[in-house]
Length: 351
Figure 1: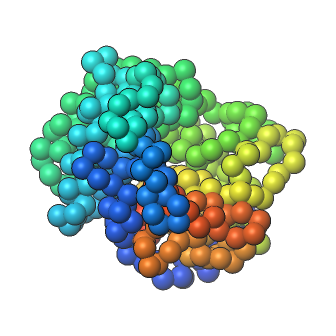
Figure 2: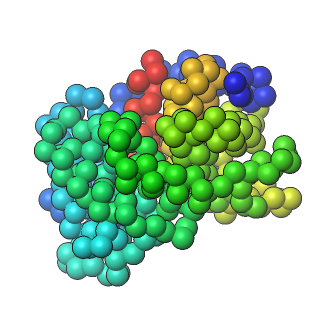
C-alpha cells in the first residue's frame, strides 16, 4: 500500500486537530439568483456585471448534492444549478460556459474545462442528490454529455470524476465506464523518475484532480497497476506541497519541472482538489495518512498556511479568493467559496 505517512510530516495532525466549522451555504446563496451562480464578488458583494459561468454553477451543483440532509435552501440551489446546466447544454452534449447578466450566452458551446466540470456536477447529482427527480434529470444530461470527448486532460479528468460518481451508484453504466477509462488514458501516468512522477512537465491548476481520476479508474475498473500509479502521483504531489508541516500549494502561475517554485498567489481550488483526492484515496485504501492530508487542507483555510491567516470570513461564510504575499485577497467569489464548502464537507464526513 502506498502511503505518505512519514514523508509529508506530521503537520496534518495539527491541522486535523483544528475544529472545522460546519459548511455554510449562506454566501453561496448570496451569490445566486433565480438563474444561476454569479462568478465574482467584491469582498462579499456580488458583481452582477460579470455574469455567470457553467464552471462555477457545476461546482455549485456538486457541493449542494453532497449534502446528506440538505435544507430547503440547499435543495433550491441544486434545482437552479441543474436547470442552468441543462440550459447550457446543446443537443450534442457540449456546453456553453459564459452567460451575461442579460441572460445571453457570450460563447459557443464547447468541450473545455466547463464541459468536464458540468459532467462532474451532473454525475455527482445523479449519484448523491437526495431528490429522486434531480438524480433522474441529472443522469439524462450527464449521459448526453458523456458521449463526447475533450482534447484537454484537465477537462477529461473533471468529466472522469463525474463518471466515477455515476459508476459508484450505477456500476453497469457503460457510457460512464467508457468515459472513465478514456479520462485516465488522457491524463496518463508519470515516468519512473521519483523526483517528478507526474504525467506532465508542469503543474498547473487543480492538479490533484488528475491523480484522483487515475485512482478512481484503477479502483472502479479493477486495475491494480493503475490504482498504484494514481496513488504514487498523489503521494508525490502532497509531499511537494507541504512546507514545515503546513500545506503550501503550487501557486496560480504553476510550477515547471526544474523551474523556480514560487509561493504566491495560492488558490483555494488547489486546496480543494487535494482534499477531494485525499478523501478518495482514504476511502479506497483505508490508509490514515490520507486523512492527515485532508486535515492539512482544512487547516489551510483555517489559518494553518504560509502566512498563518484564515482564508475565509466566518461572518459571511465566503472563502477568500487567494493567498497573496501580503495576506488574503478579501474578495469572496464563487470558486473560492465553493472550494471552502467542498473541503469542509470532507472534514465533516471524516470527523
